[in-house]
Amino acid sequence: MAKRLVEVFTAGCPLCDETLKLVRSLACENCDIQVWDLREGNSTSESLEKATQYGIHRVPAVVVNGKLAECCQNQQPISREALVAAGIGQK
Image (cartoon, rainbow, N blue to C red):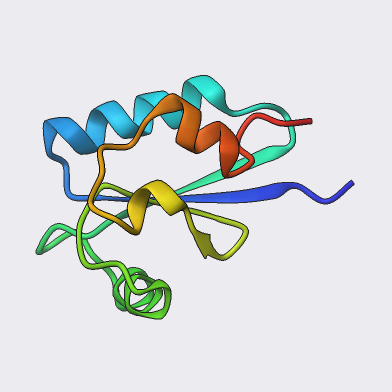
């Protein structure tokens, strides 16, 4: 079975850190987590290109298998339920 790619876009803020902790706590052996730090001086051209490609305009943001999680599309706080609905932690 192919692993699920979970990409977390952060800027090192407390909300970003909490989201990353939540994603890591939900992740299972089928989840491959990639963290993209968008802070000035830490970001790479690849991380910025990916953020643009996914239409990310705020952080934290979570992308599962190339699709921006619904909870990250509408300015709502990221919740456990929304991340599970996006497929994180499901075997």
